[in-house]
Image (cartoon, rainbow, N blue to C red; front, side, top):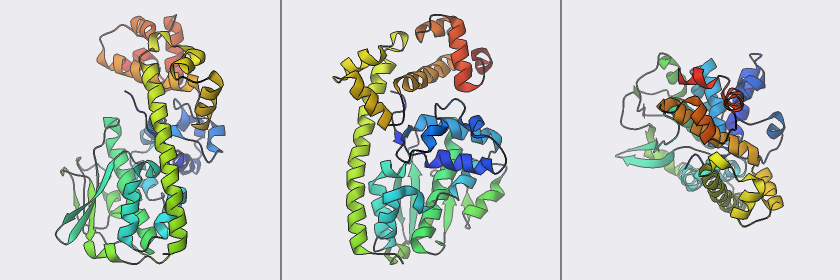
Length: 330
């Protein structure tokens, strides 16, 4: 099954704001993502990680170190109720353990963990399963933002003892020292940064038991709703993926989901997408896979994806990616 995870607009909004200062219109960054300006004005909009990664890929093409740039801007306040629950925790360790309990609310693409290593604790980001070409960007964004969150929680910079990255050092390695003021190791076995374990018992300056309890309970309910939405969306995507050659339409899909077309439209609207946007995203993903495999001619790919004419597929692919299928394959 293709990407079924939902996330917030935090990263996308940051990308747009970062490049806006350079005079770059948002349309160039949103190209191929299916996200429109109206979506950005709705605080509760949820997008798929695939849509998020499309915007981020557009950003990386313009600036390779943008993962570090964005990560340093992702403060704890960007995480809504979860952010408040973390800030009002009793200790630093309590806050980190709470964050790990709700990865869906963090919007992370990694399995996060705290690994004890003698007197050190390694804050580790592992199990990345998304687009390989975007791994470095996502590690940079994840670890840089986690470091900023740690600093925000403590009200002072968290002193790091080391940082590790699974990939080779990029040509902008010097920028890493701005985010991680510690010894750096590349081509390592994990992606992580380390700090003294005594920090875990550090009381937080904004600790408030009453507010924390209320926020933690709201996070629990939001997480249940959010993960339920993900499971529901995952089922829709699974059904559509198996029928790309003859899409069932909104009425047919609603029948397969045992609900009315109106209910299906409402649920999709609440998730910040539409039937056509989902179908286009799945077709785009499958088209990229088949074009990369270089086994099927383009006209056959068009047929397999339910396009009556090759020209229609070409137009759609240009709309999704900005290039023609033949250029993508080349």
